[in-house]
Amino acid sequence: MTKPSEHHQDVPPADDILPGADIPAGEGIAGALAAAEARVAELEGKLTELNDKALRALAEAENTRKRMEKERQDTAKFAVSSFARELLSVADNLGRALAAITPEQRTQDGPLKTIFTGVEATERELLRSLENNGIKKIDPLGQMFDPNLHEVMFEIDAPDQKPGTILQVLEPTYTIHDRLLRSARVGIAKGGIAAEGSQIDESV
Image 1 (tube, rainbow, N blue to C red):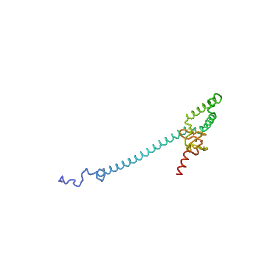
Image 2 (cartoon, helix red, strand yellow):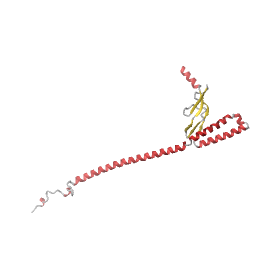
Image 3 (cartoon, helix red, strand yellow):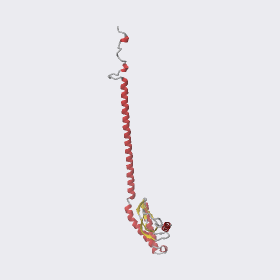
Image 4 (cartoon, one colour):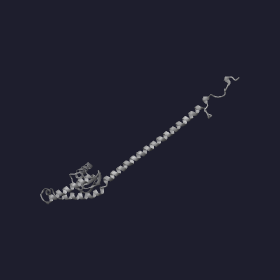
């Protein structure tokens, strides 16, 4: 008769055997978990990368949209530039006609006063129409010469003025939506206060 203690003494406990496998159950589960965690980490990394690419693509699309919108607005704003330049010569001629009538003739009853009143009203209406389209007239008389805004046509001897002071305006400056449309043509002071002062400083 076989003793209970001697029966199945070489068979390991059932908990240590994985059915259908030759490895202990504990090591098989740990390996599977490690592999799963590695796969999850890999997928999370790819997901992060895809999210970054998607965000960059969206940002680029938004920048492109804004750039195209600005270009569209600029095209609408400055489409009339060529036509506006042609109208400026009309405004110049109206200004010359007004300047040709002296202040005395403007106040005396007669045809010249009537002409002045009519031309002045026409010029005012033209300038209002230009301003409605973002075009502004700037009279630089008395300002200092700025090569970005003015074109010097001649110099004037003016001992009591600083060199570069605009003393005569042949054609005023015009801008369109704060962008230069046409430079002014001007006459500026040749010498004067600043020039004399600089000569004195140099001689000291």
